[in-house]
Amino acid sequence: MARKPRTYHPHETRLLQGIAARVFQARQAAGLSQEDLADRAHLSRSHISKIETSHSDPQITTLHRVARALGLSLQDLVTMADPAPDESLR
Figure (tube, rainbow, N blue to C red):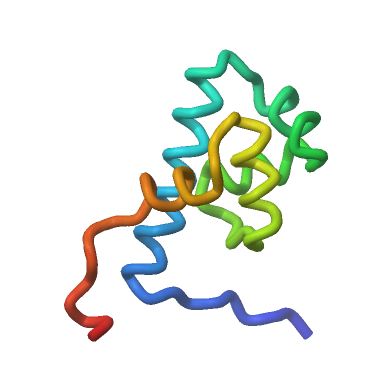
């Protein structure tokens, strides 16, 4: 039986989109291809692609590997991607 896709709160969706954009921008700024970043982070190129297109909800350890491969801290990667607080979460 097929697994039902996970539904995300709008804030979570914006966060994943922000992380996707931040990874893409940082990779481009570093002059890296997806393959280069994948090699540095010890991930597959398809996994990097899924992160950059918001088709993945990466684990914290994966984000840490990506951030380090980009020369960023995990905090910088996530903080710069985090959208403004959503009042509905309170």
